[in-house]
Image 1 (cartoon, rainbow over the protein chains, first blue to last red):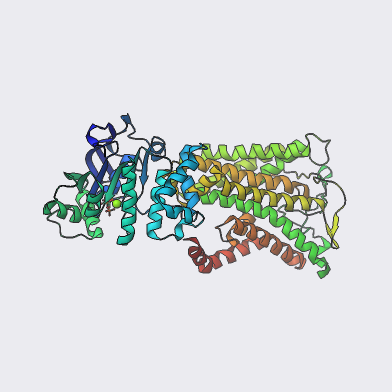
Image 2 (image 1 turned 45 degrees about the vertical axis):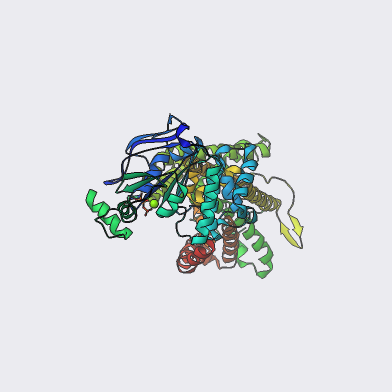
Length: 263
Length: 336
Ligand SMILES: Nc1ncnc2c1ncn2[C@@H]1O[C@H](COP(=O)(O)OP(=O)(O)OP(=O)(O)O)[C@@H](O)[C@H]1O
Ligand SMILES: [Mg+2]
C-alpha cells in the first residue's frame, strides 16, 4: 500500500462555513485529503457532517472558506459543476431515482461523461465491484433493499470516475451483515486507489475504513486522530453525543439546542 | 361534429371535412340538428370523441411534461396550441388561399417556431422568477397566455380561419362508419408522437435526464444535470406538443385567437382524470374525456348542449374530488 504522505493533495478545505439563515451548521472547518487517502468524519446527530459535505461539493453555498480540488479552486461552484471536475457526493439516504431501473440510475451517474466510450467500461467496473448490480439491472431502484440501494448509490457515484468520492453515512439504516458488504466494497475501492471522504455515525466502522478521523462537534472539528490510535473515552463520547456535558442524544433535542443557541 | 359555429362571414366560410369544431362558441345561437340524431350515430360520435381526445391527450401530456419537471402548471398550453394552428395557417395559406408552402413544411416551421418560443418564454419570463413558488409561476403563465392571445389578435383580428385537410377526398368508410381523412392524420400522428416521446424518455440521455429532474431534482444535480436548463427544455417540449396538436387540428376546426383557453381547461381535465402522474394516464384521460364530451353533447337536448362548455368544468370538479379521495393514495402505492 502506498504511504499517503508523499502523495499530492487531492482535496483541500480551508476555514469552510455553512449557515442556514441564523443556524451556523459548519464553523470554519479545515481539512485536507491526499490522493488515495481515506478520511473519516464522525460526530453526533446535528454536528454538521452532512452540511460540511454539502458545502464542500456546492450542494449548499458555503458562507465562507475555500475549497480546492487538485489545487484548483472550486469553492462557490454549484454541485453540477464540481461533479464535472471530479468531486462526487454519495448523499445521505441514497437519493436514488426510485422509479427508474438500476441500470438507468447508473447511466445517469455517468451523465457528465456525455456519449463517451468510457461509459460501458465504467458500467463493467462498478458491476465488478458490486456483482448484485448485474443481476438487478432492470429492477426499479426504489424496490431494492436498503443495502442494495446503498450499493447502487455508491456505484452511481463511481460512474463518472471521480477524483474524490464523498460518502455520507454508508451504514445508515442497514443491518450489520449488509454493512459488512458495503464496507468491503469501500475497502476494495480504497485498495484501487480511490480517494475517499467518509462520514459516519458509527465510529468503529469509520475507524475500520479510514486512515485518519476527524471528530465534529457543533459545526467544528474538535479532534483529529490517526484511525488506528486508541480512541480515548472523551473522544468517543464527543463523537456519539455531541459533547461530554450533553447527555441528550435525541436528534430533535440536538437540533433545538443548535437552533436556540444561534437564533 | 358536435357544436359547430355557423360562420356567415364570406371569407371564413370554410367547412372542414368532418365539420367538427372545437372552437369556443359561448354565444351560440344556432344549434345543428345533430342533437335530434338517434343512436344510429353512435359509432361516428365515438370516432369524433377519440379524435378530439387525441388533441386533448397531446395538450395534457404537454401540461404533464412541464409540471413534472418544473412543478409549474402551464396555463398557456392552449395558447401554444393556438399559435401552432395559426402559424400553420399562415405558412400553408388559410381558407383555400393559393398554396404558399407545402403543408409538411408549414407544419414543421410552425412547430419549430412555437417550440423555440416556449423555450424562450421560459428563459425570459419564468427562469428569473423560478424561486417565487408555483402559484406565482402559474400566474405568470396566465400572463403568457394573455400575451399570446393578444399577439394573435393583432394580425388575425377576431376572424376565424380554416385549412384544407392534409389529404383531400371523401371520408373513408371503415366497417360502415364514415371517417373523415383528417381523423386518420390526427389519430395516426398522435400515436407516432407518443411513441417518439416514449422512446425519447426511456432510451435517450436527454430524456433520462429530464425524467431524473422530475423523479429527484437533488439527485439530478448530484450527477451533474443542470436542472435549470431542463426547465427550459421542458417548456420547449411542452410547447412543441401543443403546437403539433394545433397544426393537426386546424383542418377540422376554425382557428381563432381565443381558441386556447377552452382547450387549456379541457387539457387540464384530461390531465387530472388521467391521474396527473404518467403520460399514459394523460393520454387515457384525454381520449376518455374526448369520448365523454362527444357523447354528452351528442345525446343531450339542445337546451343542455347549449351549456357545452360547462361539461369540462363539471368534470374537472368531479375529477378533483375523486382524486382527493382515492387516486392520490393509489398513486402513493404505485410510486415508491
Ligand atoms: N436545510 C437546513 N435548514 C436549516 N437548518 C439545517 C438544514 N440542514 C441542516 N440544518 C441544521 O444544521 C445542523 C447540522 O445538520 P447536519 O445535517 O449537517 O448534521 P449531521 O452531522 O449530518 O447530522 P446527522 O448525523 O443526523 O446526519 C443541524 O442543527 C441541522 O438542524
Ligand atoms: Mg448527516
